Length: 433
Image (cartoon, rainbow, N blue to C red; front, side):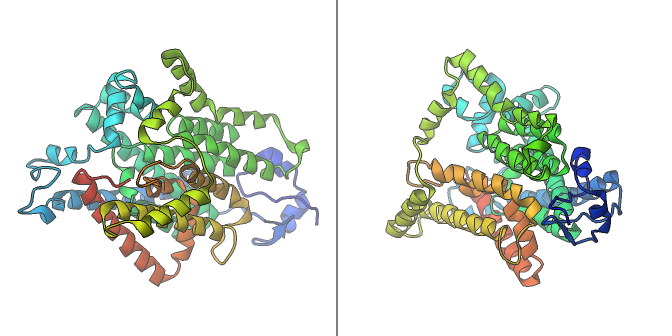
């Protein structure tokens, strides 16, 4: 049989044309052609119906999460009965209860949305697309900029769950896809997807770009990656996944590269636009790197060096059960967990299909970023367990592991229980991630 790749349904016409028709016809579902799985016959629901199914799953997952967050917000002051809570007295109205979610980085996004970057130049460490969207939403929605920020995050959270389900369903099946979307929101830091942070916007754009790469919609994939790069610096890492997947779909042959390869130039467009703004406004295109020093980001080192430093801090910390030591344990454990899951995405009983390795490329680079550029403070991996929400491939491996009912129950109970505790910590104005 010719050494050619039989692509999945939805691959671009140029790719399908390069595959011998007879090989495609003779390959049964599950049989390999040129080392890749042959696509099954084009049967099943239409594209619109598949997206409708993903929306339904995403909506109910999203709604169940909102119900949990409402309950925990109401109960967050119960442990402090008779004690002085850092967050103050229990809220006496819904609006005051919602204000309890206005914590930490949210302040910076609201400053940028309301006044731009010049009020405090340290704000350039925060990428512009999320606060720009909040500013636009604030012009048409009641409730001020914070209410607009919550609205934007809620919509983006729903979008992230829908597109995660859709990608997982095409990679695996419906049951795996349901678990992947649920595990994402159930993760201990999953509540950041609805908080006034840019996490859900970035994940929706990044996973949307990865989905379009899989389908061979290169211009849309590049545009979404560019928007992701205007949301978080990690968006530029989608370029590596784009290049890998484009070459894979074109048989790793330079002769098959077409003019649509130029769409990769869209990937850094968001970062380039932001750097152009910084150059014009502050005289330095890399002003965001200077601002990072305010948060003790300065310099780079090998990821294993960072892991060793955090492990030593945990060992030497006194008292062992202090909040800061818990943060170190949580972030280091998450880093090691994600490394293990991404390894299992490549080898072992839960590995992803070889055609899906581009997801591992992006996830590995995203995970490496905080390991290579740690915070030079008493918790170097601060926020890594929030950034791990962006490692989509890891959640797909978890979804496969969830076929075991015992694992599914233990993971769900552990993750949701820990997330509930972390929401209380967050609402009480203490640092989580």
